[in-house]
Image (cartoon, rainbow, N blue to C red; front, side, top):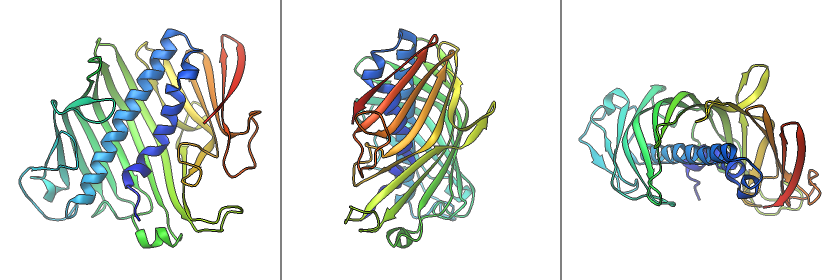
Length: 319
């Protein structure tokens, strides 16, 4: 059994998407905040999918960072992408998106280019290796309403522990990744723009059966946390300026923890805070029906809190 490494790189973002795109929360927000939530969902989803494609491609190629050259290749595992490997001897790949092939759900097309470079290490699977992704007019267009987002900028991904599948399944090593995205320029279809930054660490580990009281079967555990400090706030995950030119900040009060026993989409613990335009929104994961941290192996749900114009409130929802 193997888990996709792309899932290890992506899952912390999907949890934030759950927070920012939650319809129940959206019903409580003004139009600008609801739009920002929608933007957050789309941005994270598109960047997550990029990491999926890149990691899947690196796993399929003979070796990234080795002295091998070749013609452009089309990979059926990737949707609407042609990978140019002509500079692979220089540790560079070019992901060229055709702009016409409908992909994923909701269906969308992708155009532009992403340049992927191995900037540290001899192979992506080695501990300490770093890849840089450069977005060059990378554009995603949602086919249902023709809404689009265009990205320009750079992000890096560092493989902290290396890829050791044997150690992973014997619970002697874990998969751990560090992401940095600084000053990603984002342009929306109405020419409004935003600037996006992110810094986070995600980790996956394999837990043997009977290690956790009450759980006899083995499972995969996940953890994510913000990884930088900004203006006196630590464990910051993302920050920048939204399409309304309002500064925003998202940070962790405690790391998100989840596992495959309960369902990766049902975190056992974790707390996020999101600040924008002077208002604050909180997400407490892994609570009981009263909003308290649960002692059960699997939690009831999550609590959303908000402080808008000095008025605070909260509400508990089931997963």
